[in-house]
Amino acid sequence: MAALPLGLIGLYLRLRMEDTPNFRAIQEEQEVEAAPLRETIRSHGVDILKVVGAIVFGTALTYLLIYLPTYLPEVLDVSSSQALTANLIGVAFLLIFTPVVAVLSEMMGRKPFLVGAALGTLILTFPGFLLLQGGFASIAVGCAIFGSLVGVFGGAYPAAFSEMFPTKVRYSALSLGYSVSVSIFGGTAPLIFTFLLQRTGNPISPAFYVVVAAVVSTVATLTIAETARRPLPDV
Image (cartoon, rainbow, N blue to C red; front, side):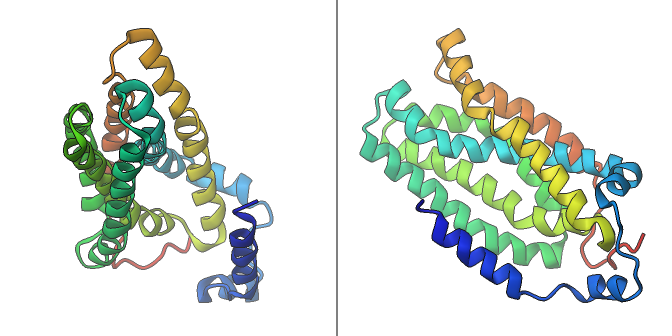
């Protein structure tokens, strides 16, 4: 219920928002794809798989941030107030890095940030979890690391992935790749974290899932071509 007003605002903005000039052009030329999902999978399946792979680590990290207020008190006996405060610090870093990277990606390109965020997650996940085992200052730094990595990725991927697909299937392709990755690898992440903790008894065990996700995403992002400052694809 709390999200209902925001949902209504979003619906109002979408209904009032004009389509892009490129989309209006293909509408006027009657080139809007009648079955965009079928055309998307048939012609752009490989690129959709790249999007799925690239998002794996980002969605795993995002759900880790959501999971930390539960993980810290229940697994590490951190007080709820400290857990929420540290998590808020992580979210603050996410909010700072996202717009900054969005601007920088226009000048420096999308790919360096996509690859950098995935590779950074691969390198920093275990140190980040070790920081969570310490006092409040250490926990806050760990949360800040995770939030920053999500922010770096979040600032670059919307434009990068949108620019991979032609106008007539862009929305279908991007939403399909994003939804599949988030549903499979993000929605199940808290269950996997809990399973690993219960089976291993190791408080750092959730890091293994995030690291595996980062390996997949590092490979996927390396295969994505740079899209900044290039004309949008027409076909």
